[in-house]
Image (cartoon, rainbow, N blue to C red; front, side, top):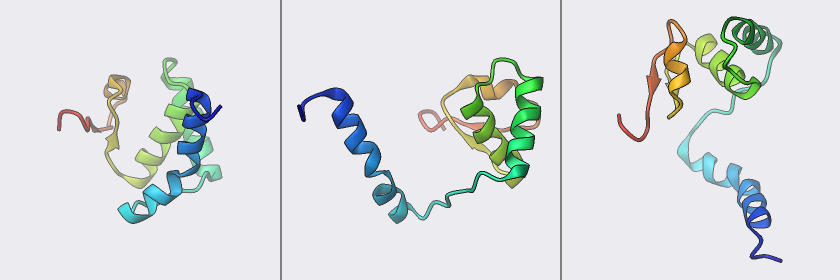
Length: 87
């Protein structure tokens, strides 16, 4: 069963923290402020899903650019998207 794509994907997902730690990336908490901002974004931008709205809320609250290939973020005013495949 180890050749099953779902099992392989799950096993790789479990290793995420091992891979993130050496990169020096900060893992941001899911706070009440993030949820409030996420809800505001969902109401304003109907094409956003909950995951994108949380990612975006963090970006806005942290005053950062968003790293994504998803062009949907280009529609959000005040947000700068960095496409890792192009920039």
